[in-house]
Image (tube, rainbow, N blue to C red):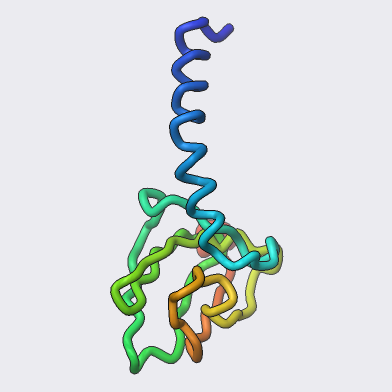
Length: 114
C-alpha cells in the first residue's frame, strides 16, 4: 500500500508538471493522435537539427525526438497506431516553426522485432 507521503509527492509532481504539459500542448498543431503526441524535451532519446538541405528524417515507432528548426525546438513521441509510414513534419510542428517540405518516415521499433 502506498504511504500518504508518497501519494502527496506524486500529486505535487503532477500538479507542478501540468502547466508545462498544457503549455507544450497548446503550441502544437492539433495533430491526429494516431501520429503520436507532443512531450517534454527531457523525454527525448535524440535531437535532430532540421536545416535547409534536410528533406527527410527516419525514426522508429515509439521513439521520442526533439526537432530543432530555425532556432526553435519541439519534442514528439512517435507513438503511432501504424508500425510504419510517413508524415509531413509540418503536421506536428508548433505554430511558427517552418518545417515544410521535410518528411518523417517511421518504421517498426527494432526492440519489438523477433
